[in-house]
Length: 287
Image (cartoon, rainbow, N blue to C red; front, side):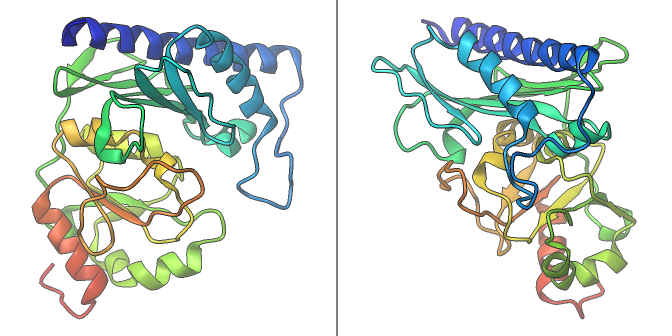
């Protein structure tokens, strides 16, 4: 099977899964009163949501006959005896946002052409679909693409060329009770950047960074796991950087749910170096 045919199969599979999930969620809103908070455990901010189960059922039905290992966030792994690739899916990245009718929760999906001990650097394909916006991001043939839900037009994307913090706009993740640790880490960065925000919707944030709509992301809460980073191929093919808080690549980090990963994502190496300098030497105002 050629690389082109393989890419087409991945694209068809990803789009099919995303659209079926969207239809199922919309149908649920039509026929049922939307819940403000559909978590099974109201005391656990990371608890699985009831709407996640809607999406998971869609996925399991669609991949039932596909020879691949299937890793779904908050769900047991489905192993296939003749697996040819590994499929990773966050059914609804931003479940709380969906429950509350805010932001742009999304379906995030990635594929690795290997079936054992998959790391972030092994991911060869990624697809992210905004459930509210209809925006779609994808990797194909070594490039990253963005399809606007408004214009229906697709274009290749590249990260921004911004290298100075005083011109940079980005995301500083503060949700899930991690604000104190995050602010302690990013206090200097907060005063140096032009604009910092938080939507706590990891895949969409990485994709917006990939298309140059933002310039950086910092997550030092020790709350995210590698599953939150499966949109990484889109950022990588757009020219972006993903590293830990000391600047080391995260390519060798295993995709294992529950193991926390702090990270920096930047549009380019120059901006990454300035972010690292700000985090670790707050007195350096030359950033």
